[in-house]
Image 1 (cartoon, one colour):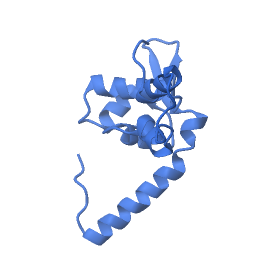
Image 2 (cartoon, one colour):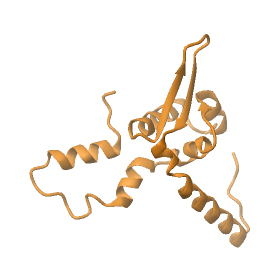
Image 3 (cartoon, helix red, strand yellow):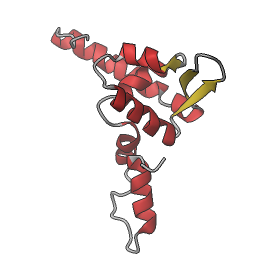
Image 4 (tube, helix red, strand yellow):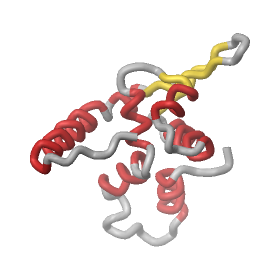
Length: 131
């Protein structure tokens, strides 16, 4: 694939530079946002936390995402080593997406995000809209 993820672009830029990188170039928060940031990645990952999912399942679970964006986000997560795909040789073709070992490491982050979201809903009394 010709297109690089944000994190791959940043790494490539730092390695190719003849000048020392700025002090914030290797910021862990920036790296996390490069890999997991965006409108859809966390939502996609939340559906892969407990079991592999087929593309069609993910599309049904996130109906507001376009097919192009879902494919792009899955590819970027795959290139960054967070998600892998398993292709079954059968008719009709079957492809499942699942978290890699590196991707499994995001589970504690999601537990914290869910806890924070639940607390926020209780405090404000206003749940987020469900699509």
